[in-house]
Length: 274
Length: 274
Image (tube, each protein chain N blue to C red):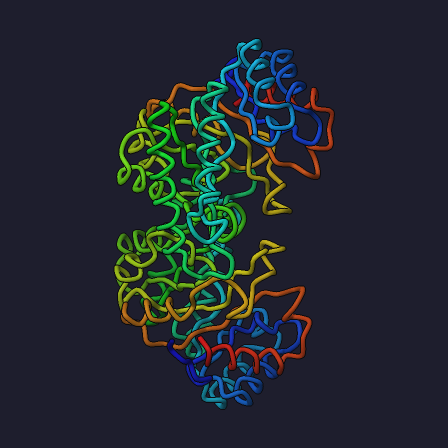
């Protein structure tokens, strides 16, 4: 069993989004010895990019990713506003020194039943964002989402599919592997190996609860569910990933209701155990 | 757009499980011109196997499947009771003249995080049931369930994985393809083609609603969601399947609350449209 010390952890701000603003997230990370942070854009916008950048630089925290770009299908086609927003996301990621922009690519356009068409829009959109990201040396990390989100959040749902898109688009694009989304995948071992160092850009952890009472906001704290998290950590390390483990827990009924310091303390304890 | 007339439909009894007993299901199928029925074992046990067999023979309905065997991991290992129950399911399927026994294979054993271990138990269990089923000439249809059920219902979650197991076990075993479980799969086209006539044993339809409010009991009526059902019907037919389309809708908030004749009438209307 591999132990993770706090400085090997990154806090995805969604984990305490109900309790803390961005400044409190940064201070909380430092207080609990976290090595990194992954800001959601809305949290960052609340405080302002300039101020956010200063806080992050002062903190010395690694920024494991900016969450999130994507949503290419939100307007049914690649409109200027969708593409512009993704360029802004890349610019913001550069400003805060993020290791990558995490992409939640979008699901089916409103009223559509054509998932293959949605995937074409997404691939084209990623290609255009990637063209821009390369000019500013920012990496694009596609996050394949659990198939239960295929209709309304992301039509990229497996690591194999993600890597097929990456192979098509070339260097500078890879995967954000979140154990919540991929733990069930019969091919995950070979696909993580296939991804390798260049494509493994982020590693997210939380747990799958049994039962899961809500499809979006009932993620578990590491150790409370059925995912072999230390096994996955070993897999991505064998695949060449040596970044921080980013903790992203959406939990309306439990962790979002607790004192945020208790949440971070629990995370560090559980990470030591797994 | 391919139209399905009622005699090309089979009623999975779960669709009206809250409204009708088995006799009412059989009579309802005849009244609405359905060509087949797929009984759940509990419905059949309520009326008694002998009486159920008589009703089915008198009705002339095709039995597209007996639902369900499997649950190999329910006791954490392949106990006699688990294996015996699967043999009973095979015997019952023979008695009612079913085209196959549908297998929901089971998820993780209680307290386990070892999905690979669960899959080994399941494969061994299927192999033993198949050995028996071959002696009585009954087919075994593995139903890959949506990945959101990997922990608690079935650790076989894609058609590729299903067919890999089938390749390992040989003839007499195949897949029950339910659009609800597989519609999101980026590989589904090629895997249906790979399956072919011998492995495509059943085809189940319903729809994926957006939003889906409950992970188990919020399936949609065909046409109310995002699945391209006629596209899938064409795919399995191109793959060699020419059996009935079995309608299986779990719907606590909607269809289970309605008059069952209205449900069947709606099914026949929607099937004509898709």
